[in-house]
Image 1 (tube, rainbow, N blue to C red):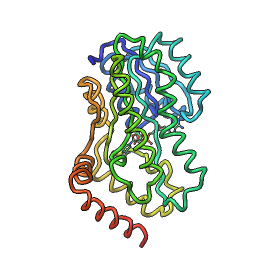
Image 2: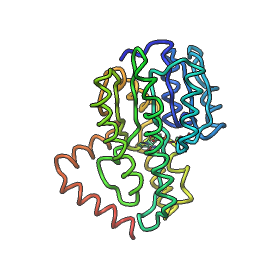
Image 3: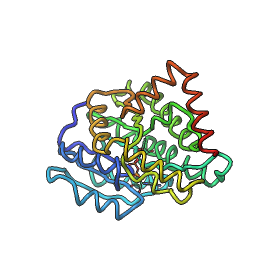
Length: 271
Ligand SMILES: NC(=O)c1ccc[n+]([C@@H]2O[C@H](COP(=O)([O-])OP(=O)(O)OC[C@H]3O[C@@H](n4cnc5c(N)ncnc54)[C@H](O)[C@@H]3O)[C@@H](O)[C@H]2O)c1
């Protein structure tokens, strides 16, 4: 769809990283924004750095794992903006720990943010998106939906869930004129790993992963550009970064090679 000035975009996880960059890119196009995050500080920072041609901007301190808070968010957004054209379900976290050291609370938190957050977003904005003159949903998955990375079972499981939820919505909602895109980036230069660093099995290894992501990854602004293009071109799936493209090809066309690589990573993590 054409992203027109005045269109309303709801962005979860807008307090930094990819969410902050998407907010800036949509503001550049004159969109009105409902910025959503659990961090008031992050929201204020994003809102304070938007380009001047942004439409109306509202800030919403919301935990996406809360059904009640997400329902209230929908009501607040409709009251403030009158409708919704673009929904970006972006809030997400990672946990760098083995399955055996995941507590059930860890799983509930991961599924709560990475999967339920996306389900609530789609559920509560369903009707409003259907009433808009043009509408598009973007769900942040990851290249981790293509491969079961050792040490990241909850991340991979939730991101694969987001991918297939998006595929179903793409088929269902396409008939109603609502575009749906899942985004699959590889490493991005954000603070995602640092946000849960202390909870990692191996903090030193997690720090190395963070440094590697910053060395080899793409900038959040680059991901935001791909998201905007994904909306404009109505893409079903968008892979971002050389690593995401490479792993997609390996797991699809050379799965045995992929298995060898995954076993090697697993062995290295166990050393
Ligand atoms: N960073 C990467 O390498 C990478 C790679 C692939 C996919 N992704 C995905 O991109 C998305 C954005 O990640 P990022 O790298 O910008 O991370 P980030 O940590 O920089 O930003 C995530 C934002 O989500 C917010 N958030 C966390 N829990 C929340 C909750 N319960 N409710 C509301 N907001 C909450 C945080 O406060 C933060 O502002 C995530 O879904 C992530 O899984 C990231």
